[in-house]
Image 1: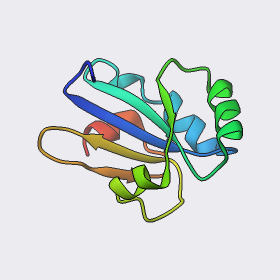
Image 2 (image 1 turned 180 degrees about the horizontal axis):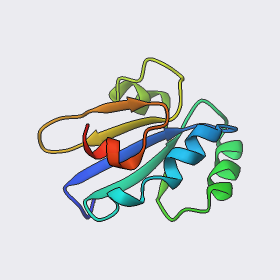
Image 3 (image 1 turned 90 degrees about the horizontal axis):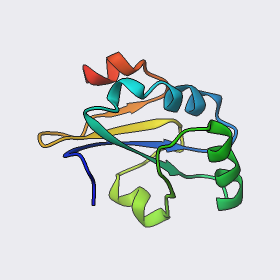
Length: 104
């Protein structure tokens, strides 16, 4: 169960410096959004190592192919940031400053 009504999901992969930069840059969303990380396009072991390198407290999960389909992910480009709110599901691909994500 999510503790906040709005959620940000960030899709990351192994060896993705833009993913690290994006995830470290999400602090401005902490008060309003639940932030969840989804590892994809790499094996679980390498994603787990990548997550530990990030040194963040956001929960992280492995994105199975069925989860990727449900999110309508059509590209392996990362990071992909999904902002789920009551009204819409905006998507950002690539690094975007936190303040700009709030304006999406």
